Structure formats: structure tokens, C-alpha cells
Amino acid sequence: MREAVQDYYGRQLQSSDDLKTTACCDTSAVPEWLKPLLSKIHPEVLSRYYGCGLVCPPLLKGCRVLDLGCGSGRDVYALAQLVGPDGLVVGVDMTPEQLAVAERHRGHHAREFGFDNVRFLHGYIEQLEQLDLEPGSFDVIVSNCVVNLSPDKDAVLRGVHRLLKEGGEFYFSDVYADRRVPEAVREDPVLYGECLGGALYWNDFLRLAQGSGFIDPRLAEDRPLEITDPELAARTDSLRFFSATYRLFKLDALESDCEDYGQAVIYRGTVPNFPHRFPLDKHHLIEAGRVFPVCGNTWRMLSDTRFADHFEFIGDFSRHYGLFEGCGGGLPFDTTANNSGEAPCC
Image (cartoon, rainbow, N blue to C red; front, side):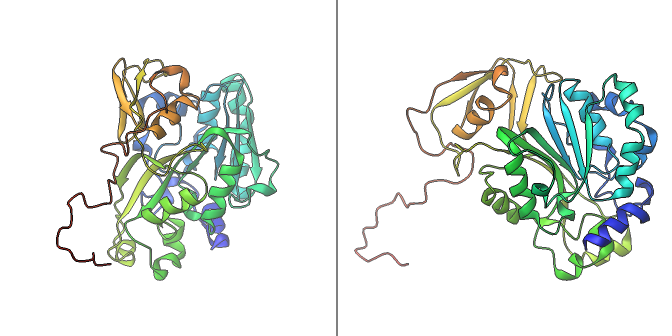
């Protein structure tokens, strides 16, 4: 399947117009604050874009960023503008034809930006340990609709965890299914190349992330995918697919559940492009200047990362109040006394 993907993206697809679905290509999802960055990117690079969702998290100035499955370099060159001359963006891809496009226009972008802060490597995202990349050296790792194409997603996540600094994050978009994808869909080369055959069942992804050291995956954005090609839609049966952006923080102190320590934060409104509200994830839209109660994990995602200077922190971890209300889960025990005198059924 790896060879089929290389052939699909290296030779069969010549531009995003050649895709048969919108699963791997949705430029409409780009927010307004990112669109000026795209206007400075070479047209050929833009035409060879096959990503989905958003992979440019805020507050990247001066950061070291790694883009997994960078293709022709669209996101690398967008990120390069955000990290600035003091930062670095490294792109990794397994398709020589795509990397050739990225390298061909490297000089153009250096002149356009006024600095050259990018690097491209040929390699496989499930074999990151074989590349010239130092463990614990990246602030942020991104990926745009590529993890689903990997035959070993567990290896990808373990490699990402190894390369991130403590407090760093993996911010990536991908395609997920509402159930486990059957073999007939997984083995279909076109469906696989269109980012559908390799999609993970969303709950399997959460378990995989947690097993790789990312204890509390946070969903940032999502949308349902429509398969407009009738023939491909028939081949996917009743499966439903979604494009989703997750952020996974490398924080060793995170807990498996959202625990309540009576803490709160106040957003200063100082993250660029987010003066009024800071969107940590889909369920945490933190309004500026307002006391916002948080669980211990959310506290650490803000206090132990690059976001710390943009918040005030109330409380500590000295007193525990149980599970944080509204974060799922709950007390597993029956609070009603069993007065029947009978032993409970197991």
C-alpha cells in the first residue's frame, strides 16, 4: 500500500483538481488570519496541495516545527512565515516528486520572506528515528491529512512523542471513521489514496494516542466529509467519515481523567490574532479577562507550555475535589444503599 500511495501522490495526481473527493483537500477551512500567508506561496506549490483541515496553531514565533508528510511544501512555507527568521520548519515526505516541487521553489520563498528557515528531508513518517532529527528538539509537530496514509500509525505517534520537547504539541488534521473500516475499503488503492481506506475508527485513535504517551487528546475542530463521487460512495458502504484536527500535548504530568483542583485561568487576550477568545480546543473557548474554571489537565496545557505568559493562574494542586464536572465520566459507584440483603450480581 505504501508503493500505491507513492504512485498516487507522485505520479497520478498532478494537482488538487485530480482528487476524486474533498477528504484530502479543503482550502475553505483556512481561517482569515492565515490567508495572507498563502498569498506569498508559489502557485505550483499551492496547486499540489492535498491536505485537510488546519495545521497552523497560534503562537509559533521562534519555534522549531516539524511537518510530517509535507508534500510540495505548502504548509512548510506558511509555517515558515509564522516562526520567523529565528525559527525553523522541517518538512518530511516519502514522495520524491513532491519534494522536488518544494525544493524547486525554496529560493523563491526565501526572497519573498526575506529569510530561509526551511529544510526538507526524504523519509517515512513511521521511521522518524532513521532521520537526522534530534529527540526532544521540536516545539510543535504538525501533519495535514497524512497519518491515515501510514501503514503503522502507532510508530508515527511514538516517533512524534520522542521528537517533541516536554510541553510541546502534535497539532494535526486527519480523517476518521465512525467505525472500524472493513478490509475491502482498506485494500482499495483509490479509497486509500483519497484518505478514506486508512482512516482510523475515532475511538481506536484515542486509545492509540494514549498508549503513545499523549494522555489527554483534545479535539480542536471537526466536520463531516461528503463523498461526492457516486462510485466511491457506493464502495464505502454505510461508513461515515470526518475530518478532524487534534492537539496532543507531551506533558508527563497529565492524568487519564479531568480532575478538579478548584483551579481557574484568566486569558490576557495577548495571543496574536485571538484578542477576544482563545480556542484551546472545541470545548474550551476561553474569553479574555474572565475567570474560567479548568481541570488540572487544562491548567497544565496552559501553564506548562508556550501559552503560559498569556494567562493568569488561580489555585494549585494542593486540594482535590474529584472529577471535573462536565468533562465526561463520573462516579462509577451506586450511591443508593442496597438494603435487600442480597449479594450484588456480578
